[in-house]
Each structure stands twice: as structure tokens, then as C-alpha cells.
Length: 466
Image (cartoon, rainbow, N blue to C red; front, top):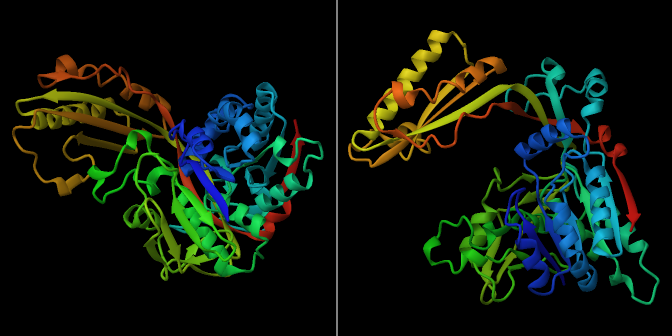
């Protein structure tokens, strides 16, 4: 049996969770999933400001903290914390091991970043067309800020093999050196598929086993969403979310998996929490496409296997897709969002009147925004028109007004037009303590597909020892 735990579902997740996973009981692998499409854009902007950054900076002090425990307990960490600068991240992690006084091996997976090759790739006939509207990338090529391919488990498996091949021959044994794999954009579930393939020696053509491993990875990838966090079913009965336990998958060589968490930790693992996570963002349950396999979730069955334990069976799979997904970030102007709170009576009427006033003033200035949006937080910001008319007795409501433009100057001008509403708009305005809205660059998401042979020959794995 191999125990794979997850300690991060995104960059910004519970920073104590990885520590709890390491110290709370026996695990073999700790996966840390930091990346989303928006995260890659944020990291790209970071790297533009400082070429030494561009990765999940939280990861480095975390590793410095847990390196000694990882070494003594023999836990291997696999993280896509590298973002758009995996090499810089790996160097920082190696430095962290030295500061922690821990001997370590750090493996680095590169090759997902194709931004510097886009002109060559598109010139050779690969259109990298937008998956939703079919527009070829050449129409926006001059505005591309980042382009990262979703790699699969294979290079991580190679990294794990190389880490093990260099086992410590000293008296302290193999567990005396901590082992870490740092990647850039590797698919979330593949972070879990890799250690199972590595440990059990599965062929990458055993699609049923890869399907089961993908289910395991999908359950783990969002952290505490599988253990009671963000759970709809009887959420009020879930115990001690303040100390929620993050998920652990116990996997067998036959592809059987059991979802659990450390004994004594908060949260809950039952059929409801695991089912909700399995249904999360899967699209077609019969064809959940990853770089490793097209997994079939339709035959899954879940059964209780004791307190906070759920056994999952019945995953299927078929041959992996011939093309890989690319996450491309395209510079698309600037935006800013400001807020103002209005109090009872007639809070919603005042907020809407303020939005109309603001809109007319912006029109008068001739700023020509690509988009403006006004929402009433506390009434229609989540459900939009489905919210219907607001009740007349709302105690307060927050006006959220946003603009987007290709002109930074226009957005900066807008950022100066919110505050005057305090004295020149409807009465009982408050809540402007946040100050002037911050102008941010908009990086639009451009999903595309690319042939494997344009990517995989460029993927490399390196190992450094500390």
C-alpha cells in the first residue's frame, strides 16, 4: 500500500496543512498543488518584475520548515510550485534544505514552458487555436505573456526513479535524505498518478490502473474539498473545520483506493464529501481527459470502509489524448474595481443610483471602456438577474463597480471617480476605507491543444544534491 497525501489545493491554501499532513501520521508522499490558470498569470507578472521569482514563494519557507521531518519520516514531496520559473524554485528549495541543515535531493522537471517557442511552433503549422472560439493564436501572438503545457505523470515518474537511483549509501540509509520533485505546469491529478506508477511499476498503457490513479489524484487535488471543506451536504454538521484534516489516499497495486485523513483531525470523509469532489470540474464523466489517460468515472462506486474512510472502485480508462492542453496567457488591457457601501433605508436604491451617476460621469469623460459592470454585493452579485428585485429593508448593501479598458490611463482615471460619490452622490455612503481602486493588468486565458511531439522531446529532468 502507498499513502499519498495532499497539503495544498491552490496557492494561498491553508499554510499549516502540509505540516499537519507530515506530523499527523504515516504517509509516503506529500503532493502540493499550487497552480491554476489565474495563478500562472500572477506568477508571470511576478517574474516580469523580478526574474528570480515566478513560483509559489510560500513553498520555500514551508520546505525549510518540514525538511527535517520529511527526511526522518521518509516522505517524498511532489509539488508544481515551480509555476513559470521551476528552475528558480528548485534553486530556492535547495538553499532552504541547506539552511535547514537537511541533506536532500531535489529533482526538477522542465519543458512545459513553450512561450519562447511559439513563433516557431505557429510557423510550422500548429495554430494553437482557442478551444472555445477557434481563433488562431497568430492574431494575438504579440500579446502572449505565458504559455505552459499540461505535462503528465511520465517526467515525474522519471524524476522519482532518478531520486531513488541515487539512494544514499551511507549508514543513515535511504531515508536520511529528503526527496523533493519540483515541476512547472504538470496536470493536477498527475502529481498523484506519478508516485503510484513509480511505486507499483505500472505500465503507462494500463489504462484501467491509470484511470484509478487519476480518480485518486482528482480526489486529492483540491485539498480539504474532499474532507469536508466547501461541502454542501449537511455542512453545518462537519466537525472542527478549524483544524480540518487534508485528504490521504491509500492505494493498492490493483488500483484500489481508499480516501481517508489522519485520525483526530477535523473535517469529515464520507460518501458525500468524496462524491462532491469527484463531481468537481469533470465535464464529461465518461471521458475525463488528462495527459496520462482518458478516465471513465461512470462505473465508480463508493462505500464506507469505517470512520472517515471511503473505498472507491470501478474506475476505467482508455488511451491518452494525442494532444496536450496548453494554458496561454494573453495581455488584454487593464481593469479596476471599486466599492462603496450604502446603509438603510433604501440601501439598494441608493447603490443603484450611485452606479448610474458614476456611469454618466465616466461617459462624460469619454473614457471608452471595453466593459463596465455594477453589482450589489449582498443582493445580486452572485446570482445576477435571478435575484429579482431587492427587498426594501436591506440594512446595507455594497456597490461594486468595475471597468476594463485597453487604456491604462482610462482605468487610472476611473480609479479617481469613486471617492467623490461620498459627497456628490446618494446619502449614507460608507465603507470606502479600502481607498482608491488598484489598476491591474488583465491576462486573458487562451486554452489550446498541441501535438505531443512538439513538447515531450523538450521535457527534461535534472537532480541536484544538497
